[in-house]
Image 1 (cartoon, helix red, strand yellow):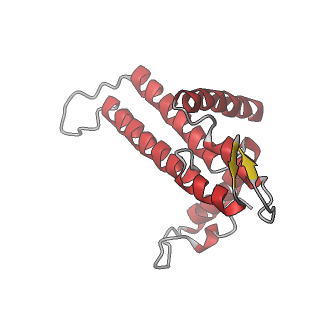
Image 2 (tube, one colour; image 1 turned 60 degrees about the horizontal axis):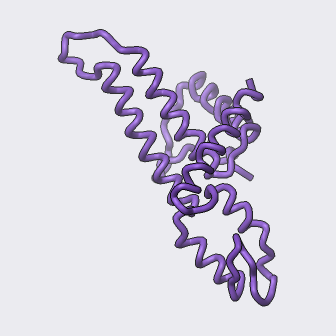
Length: 172
């Protein structure tokens, strides 16, 4: 299964690379930020980044924060796209409980689910999560959810709305 997930990530990266190239952005957010992460912040003098010469590391940092390929922007864009795809699933599943037509076009539901997966993989990649890391985080969260299920405790018990038992689920 993990090989299939890795293949899905690889193919989605290829698809996104093509889109970003067509948009004139040159590279995906993931690729661009990996390049940025490899720059030594203490490097003096001009910094060559993505074929552009900058005065300093700070100049590159400012450029990246405004760039259309900023991962934060694309996390938001992909998330919005997923929400809309989920609404399309909802429509295909005949969400109107007052409508007496209970038939569901499962082929359409499947197509919309695949659209959600495309955006979900993209947002996952923007967040810097590999298939292996995704499995690790999923497994940790599964244990938390099993504990909640077994204990019957689902409330957050804090003002920020975050579960204290989720604190150990981090990217680092």
